[in-house]
Length: 343
Image (cartoon, rainbow, N blue to C red; front, side, top):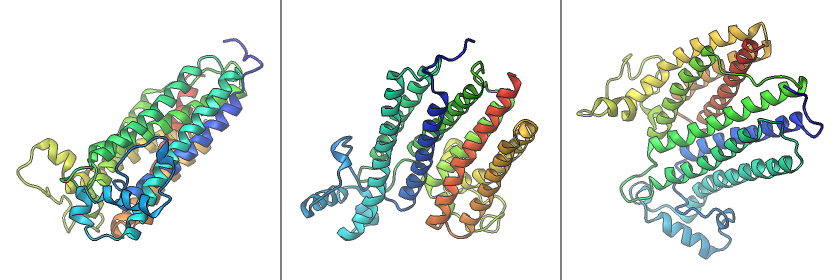
């Protein structure tokens, strides 16, 4: 590889990407609160431009409230809700969507500026465009998720759409962190090659993906409320199915008790993989190893506390925040392992 051109700014690009990653982590937390407060269906239309402005008059608020009153969540769960109560749930969904717009601008505008300034090193332009496209997909999935609950039958969004929405956000977060780490390595050594995924890195990330997928299903099904016990579930190790006469696929993916059971015990498979990864990279980058241990340790404790406390919003939000940090720490470790293997 040749030396970097004088116009390339890998450190500035990395700093920008880490700032966007921080916004995505905040977005994940706000999204979790939106789900926990059942606020996601409070805005029944998608207006990419005009939707950035909240209702500013009493008539505008009444119109938004009237739209909400037509869907099943209001008719079956919130009938009789006051306008003031509606404004409370509207706030979280509005904040969630507004932050999504902010993230889009925070990525697209600096990307354009870096491109015009020829500050993007060779080979990174397509990666940044792909990450921008993932952000666009994330927004589309968010609307399709909301749309799944905008009818008179359902009282919440479809849990599979929620899982797709959350996992795309976390995948984008991981891609941004990986790219930023590559750029930092390039800043230190102009001839540095991008890290590659090792077999260990792929294996750990796949195991973590399963755990995150089931965590999203737990959120979408309110499965955290099945029990407030740990390690038992309602005085049993395996609680049995909540709904009888269902297919195996339904039991594994849509039964709240079984989904909760899988999520709490697959976590230990994920922990085993993360410990192996942390030990692998400890000699090369001790900070990455510590970050992995700290992230999954905190996440396990928060998960247990959230269940035993009855899923209070603040604890559940911390659990979701730490889940995003686990993703970042795991990507860091996998990147270190890939860099070491390619050295």
